[in-house]
Amino acid sequence: KELLDADGDILRNGGAYYILPALRGKGGGLTLAKTGDESCPLTVVQAQSETKRGLPAVIWTPPKIAILTPGFYLNFEFQPRDLPACLQKYSTLPWKVEGESQEVKIAPKEKEQFLVGSFKIKPYRDDYKLVYCEGNSDDESCKDLGISIDDENNRRLVVKDGHPLAVRFEKAHRSG
Image 1 (cartoon, rainbow, N blue to C red):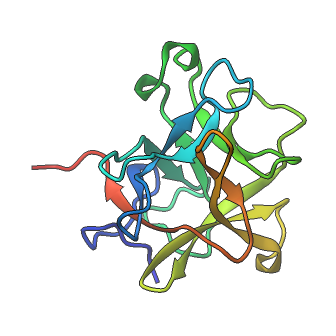
Image 2 (spheres, helix red, strand yellow):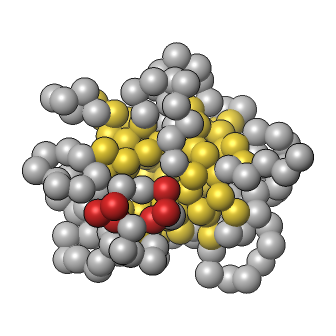
């Protein structure tokens, strides 16, 4: 069964979408924040305010197919033009999971601290959840992505099995 956006349209491979919480009142869409000693925002977080849609993420899978379904390994990336100057020099900002912290970060360059793996979008209740699959392993090893609130009140997106963030997808560029 194909994946649908908030309008009921099929998610397009390579399309840009705001990733929003399915439940209202618990923060806004996914965006970036500086955490720890980062000089540039590299950590994927949920916007504090539910009125903020966050940043559009391009969702794509290497096989050149038009329509995304729950079985596909997916890549998520933010577009540099939407971001602060310190990130605009990069052509692409893919999401990765940091091994030690299990946090989702953007990785302008390949670094050892990032795990090799992919994301999937899975049906969850009436909406969807994001999962992370380490390596290119089978479905059994995929774990939910949820929210962890840090000391600075950032709502970080982390690998957190059992407490997924329920999400929906809104087209970043609505026609008409």
